[in-house]
Image (cartoon, rainbow, N blue to C red):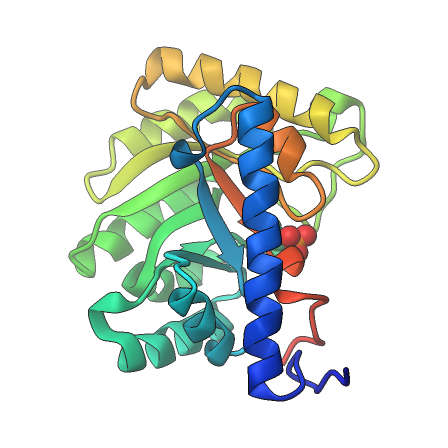
Length: 251
Ligand SMILES: *Cc1c(COP(=O)(O)O)cnc(C)c1O
C-alpha cells in the first residue's frame, strides 16, 4: 500500500488502518490492565494526533475516541476549530501534552480540556488567567523530569519540573480558581528502563496525593511503554504512532 504525504493512501484505506491500529492498542491496554489487576475502565486513552490532519481526528471520533492530544498550539488550535466546526458538541476533548510557552496559554485555554505539561510557576499563573478569561476550568497535570532521579542527564527538549518543585507547583495550581490539579505527568527518559522511571513517578504521585487527595491522575505511557505505565498506575495513556502510524514531517 502506498502512503501519501498526509499519512495514508485512499481514505478508505486510512479508515481501515486507523480502526485496526486502534483496536490493537485497545487490546494492549486491556491486557496490561488485566495483568496489573486493574479495571480498564479507569484508564483514559489519549490519542496523540500531532502532525496528522483533522480528518484523522474525525475518523478516530467515529471509532469511539473521546480524547485526543496535541503538542503545538498553532497546529492544535486550527485542528480543534476545524473539528468543532464539523462535530459541534460531539467533538473530542483536547489534551495539550507539549512544551508550552506562556504566551500561548490564552490560545490553549480556549480549546483544551487538560494541559499535561505544566512545569513552572509562571505557566500556572498564565493558564489560570487565561482559563478564567475564557470562562473555563482547565485540568492541570504537573510534568516531572524523571532524568535526575534515574541518574540520567536532563533532556532539555522534553521539559518537566525537578521533582523537588512539585509541592510548590501543586500548591499554586490548587490555589488557582480556574485550574484543577489532576495529577502528575512524565515521559520516560530516553535510554531509561520505563518500568523504573514509572516506579519513581508512582512514588511521587503517592506523595502528591498525601497533600492533594483528589490529584489521582497519572499521565504516563506512550506507544512503546504503555504496558509499564499501566503496571505503575497510569490513568492517562498518551499514544500516538501506535494508532496513527509513523509521523509525517511537521507541516
Ligand atoms: C508525541 C507524544 C506522545 C506520543 O508518542 P508516541 O510514541 O507516538 O506514542 C506522548 N506524549 C508526548 C508528550 C508527546 O509529545
